[in-house]
Image 1: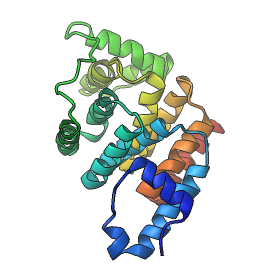
Image 2: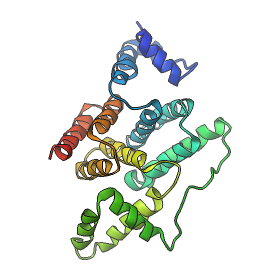
Image 3: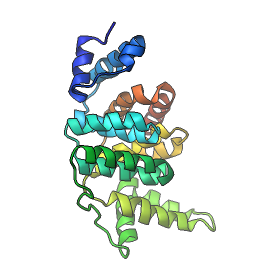
Image 4: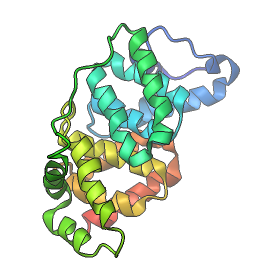
Length: 251
C-alpha cells in the first residue's frame, strides 16, 4: 500500500530523500492524503509551484502547525522560494496572526535557513521611516482596499477607536505592505490565505477578496489558492472561503 506513482513523484520533488515515518506507522492515511494532496489537488488550477508553496506556508502559520511548517518550508526552499520571500511571508503574518502565534515560526524559519547555510540577518526590505510610514501606508491601503472604503472607515470610526484606523494605516499597511521582497498581488494572496486559515474572519476575508481583485488577482486565482489549501486546512474553512469569494465576485 503506497501513494500512486504521480503522487510519489510530486512528493519526491518537494522532499527529495525524505523517508516518512508515517508511511510506516499509518500507511492507509498517507496513501489517501498523498494521493489527494500531491496528485488529485495538484491537477486543478494554474498556480505555479512557487506561489502554491508560498500560500501554503502562510496558511500553515495561521494554522499554528510548526512541524508541518518546517517540512513545507524545506519544500518551498527546494522549489526556489528565496530566503527573503520566506522571511517576508513570516513577517506578513505578524499583523494578521499576531506576534504571540508567529514567534515560534520566526525561530523555526531561522533554524531552517541556518541549517541550509543562509547567513542572517538578511538584507533589509523596509522602504519607510518612522516619519513617513503612516503616509505611505495610507496610500497603499487606499490602493489595495479602495479610497472610498478607507475614507468611510475613518469617517465611521466610533469615538475612542480612531487610533485603530491609524494603526491599520501606519502599522499593518505602512510597516508591512510597503516592504520589498514580495510583490503586492502575492502579498494579498498571502493575506487571503492566512485569514481563511484562521477561521472566524469572514468579514476580513470579504475585504481581502475585494482587495485581491483590486490588485489583479481574479476569482479563478482565489479559487485555485483555496483548492491548494484544502488538504491542509480542511473542508469547513475552505468552504467558508469559497462562500465569501462567491459573495464578492458575484455581487
